[in-house]
View 1: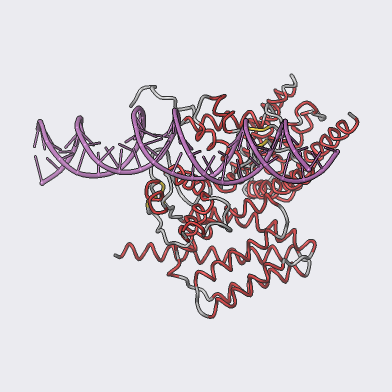
View 2: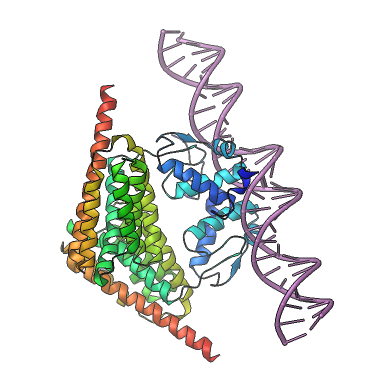
Length: 228
Length: 228
DNA sequence: GCTAGTATACTTGTCTGACGATTCTGCTCG
DNA sequence: CGAGCAGAATCGTCAGACAAGTATACTAGC
């Protein structure tokens, strides 16, 4: 049995660490939408070689967290109304399947309940980033509990973009987080009751609310720009 | 000189061409499951630099067409029973949403009809690879017709793995392709009738058949190995 | 003859440096 | 004032190199 000699928790490689770090900065909105990310800039900021930075940007591009065409600089995408609708249509497809599967066996995922607790805690002190994280964690746990590697893989990509848009609208949050918490509870309850239909219906309603908030904030922001 | 110029109109870059070529070889079963693909081998076979080969292998790994862990050589995965079930669960999730959406507006995608024709043509001369391609093209067209970029993106990944398994069982095809054609027709008809429920039900049945064939062939192959 | 531990070869991770190709920018010229 | 051109910035690809990790073969000891 070996001692505690290695960083078993941290990323296994430099590329991995770089990817995680840049990803975090993008989804949290620290890098504004439309901002350019050149390979050289990343390489410079993190003191890595350009090929390493390149690999990182390519990965993020594949996940939809950056947009890039050949010979052009990668930019953080600004999702428009169509994007958000498309994103939520895809999201609903995946999550519907998940909650239906869970409700069929009436298994309420523990991790989702934990995320709920975290969200309630964060609701008090208005820690926005924590709220978003807990929200994401809740939905992530829901899908993970199904136990399908491929469904989770698809969902991760979708949630990445969801996280991105939520991060970008950070300063304009309009709803009390407790509303979200209650909607989550409704979904869990339906799952616990073994009622796939109701679970899907609650989920659809919840996602509809979330999508509506995003679209509303997008329109608000746009009209602000127009009057400026 | 013709060797270099052949890339000019298809893929935009060398990396792209390399990726397409290797991908094709994998899904068609030209590279056997379990076979190792070292970066150096790819670089040598295609006369490209190792970093280019590396990028190619990384992309394929992200799509599930190769398996690889740090510092280990990439291998073509051999999907087991659990993998196939998981794959088809995910596939059904995505395609159900697609046919339901199409049926709601009763729009029968042209491209799917064309794929059907191609499949009928290939059925006569038992051109296996063409049959698989037409099958894939049909389902791909179905999802593409919905017009959701993200749904299509997810579906592409799924279909890649589906193609892979079908290619690997190439020599053991058990069903007449016309059966598949008829099942496809049923789905299209339900969509044309604007009946989302029936469309989903037909689709589920079709996928169940396909999954059953794959599992059957997998078991057959395994018992052959055991007796040898 | 067999197990165990070490030495060696193979492969990948990452870096440095470089050159051609492409896109963008700003400037000159009509 | 617009259009075309030159230069700068950036990306695509390559070559070569070294360190670090993994797998394998070989030797030593029982």
